[in-house]
Image 1 (cartoon, rainbow over the protein chains, first blue to last red):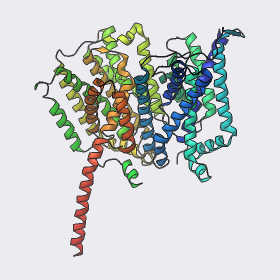
Image 2: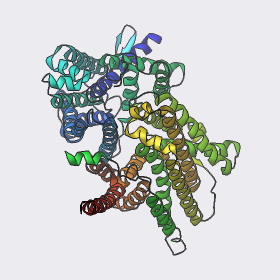
Image 3: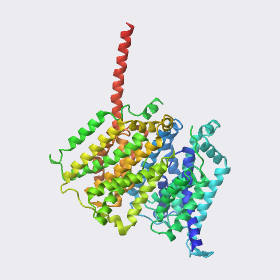
Image 4: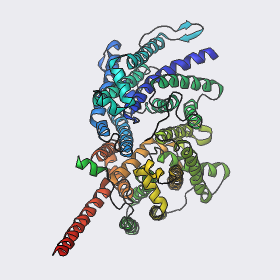
Amino acid sequence: MLSSMLVSGLITGTFYALMALGLTMIFGVLRIVNFAHGEFYMIGGFAYVLLYHSLGVPIVAALPAAVVAGAALGWVVERLLIRPVYAEMGARQQGRDEYAIIVTFALSILLIAAMTKIVGPWSLQGPRLIDGPPLLIAGIRVSPHQLAALGIALFFLLGTLYLLNYSLWGRQIRAVAQNRSAAAVMGVDVGKVSTIVFATAGGLAALAGALLSNMISPSPDVGAFPAIKSYVIIVLGGLGSPLGALIGGLLLGVIENLGAIYISFSYRDTYGLVLLVVILLVRPNGLFGEMRREV
Amino acid sequence: MAARVSSLRRPAAPTSRTQLAIALLMLAALAPLPTLGLEIYWQGVVITSLYYAMLATNWNLLAGYTGLFSLAPAGFAMLGAYVTALLWTYAGVSPLIGIPSGAIVCAVVGLIIGILTLRLSGPYLALTTLALAEILRVIALNSFDITRGEIGLEVPALFSHQSSYYYMFIVAVGCLLIGLHWLLGKPCGLYLRAIRNDETGARARGVRTVFWKVFAFTISSGFCGLAGALFAHYVIIVSPSIGHLLVTGLVMSMVVLGGMGTLLGPLVGALLVNVSSEYLRAAGDYQHIVFPIIVIVFARFCREGLVGRIAMMFNARAGVNAARGSRTTEVLASS
């Protein structure tokens, strides 16, 4: 029982990490929190479900299309709305935070309301990736769909972390996160890097939404809780730390699952807040966060 | 570039007495409407606007004057409403005690959240208040045995006539604005605005920034709870929908539209948003689409809001006159 709950916690945690990774990358590069992150997740879920059900697109094509939809939305949002943030970069932190919070929060409400107008307030269940009877692996029952979703999520999660650490783009992203003006001086196109980070984050969140659409049917406001959990995770892991997002995501998944058996199932969404309060009390910079120095 | 720099500046006199006077005149103009035959329905719209104006004024104290971003004004209103509703349902406590208790509970929760998050620099307050607001709402929804979930708890009415609520909310908003004006005129008001403009600089000049940030968040949370508790006894039913994030979105759009950091802005914004919501709702529930777009446009191109823009125009004219005056004195001096 315990081991199976641990494993299912790690599975949930993988999807949380997928969302939190994008969020923490955005924070690392732009120093803002994207309050519309849950809506990227929602768009991914709906793109997948609607392409499959309404247009009859096969799953193999619908899943990448959902990722592309999320990435495209991220790209557009960055280009149209987040660009002005750079103008105030460094000059005046207050104006930047103010603008970013107001605009991303308003965007989140706008996307929820627009989606409710377009598809209605109902939830639509997504198709399985693979059909088949549940498998027994080491005494734990998993459906082939869950295994496939987990595999894809892990592939993208580890792939993004690998690219972040070893590719040229990844190095540029980390350079901008460390010191924006120094990176610009060294010839990194900071605007382009920010756009790529936003698009990647949108794509990852949309992927999570599409992969989970069979277990959690997408509705216009489905993104609220995944988003809140990723906020908890990025604080837990340390704002701007990709490794922290991964570890934090797995940790939150396990804690929620253990809490669901040992404390109460119906309140499992609230454990994140308790965890958040504990981190803020004990280790406000998060597990992998660095002390921010102020000049 | 020059335009961008100037758009960052705040209007010169945010707490001006003129704005308070205009706000009180507006409230005074609203007051006799029920006796002049304002329909019950539109009385309700004004009451709701005034409730929102209370939330928006408190959000403005944080966002506009102190530079703090809370995403839980609706969450605190819901908490305040539930405190008075639960006290009435399970202990038979009169609303006269229940309403202040709601405000006090919210202030205490605000104090705790404030102490936890405001020691740190970064977006911790916004993240924590968002999580708090949504999780409180889920607890209220799921604890069916205690809160009856979505059905909500019934609470007693305070008055038998709607117009009494109308006057009560007018008085409440008036007191809130007078109190805010008084507070901002004190040294504390200067500290808050110093924190908003340059927190590091304010700390370097000896302002206890953490203390004043926690102070602002605590009183703002308390008054949001008070507004929620008062509103609960007007709608007579307390349900989790009071604390929906859409409500926070509306509060934000009122302040951004009216003008952040202006005393009059939230009231003007609340009336504009609520009255136009009535028409947008009739046209097919477009309010949650239209207002976020307005917010984004204002945040991008007109961050001082309507009242701030008008105040700037007046200030600019005054500036021109002052410049003309100084040139005259120069001419006089040289002759």
